[in-house]
Image (tube, rainbow, N blue to C red; front, side):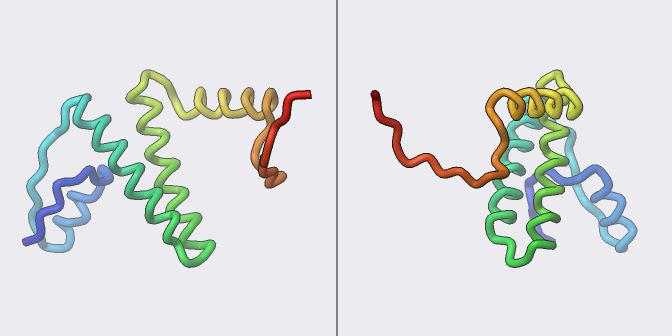
Length: 108
């Protein structure tokens, strides 16, 4: 039987059991949970960067968004608050829609 030692989505144990298999789990403490969420973000970002199609890329972005929701809660916030901060920053500094690439800044 494979050993995974990684954070999984909440319904994965149920899915495993429905397939006729058993799994071993343990509940993480807050510090471990935060660390494992961060590891999972790296994993999902790598999968996004390796996506071959737009559909695969969007699927991985959805996984990253789910992790952002969980991390917001770990840090005493919410996805809605993160979105509000994102909007405020976009208003003050802009977004990334125009594809601007800064090459150099010179003193006048």
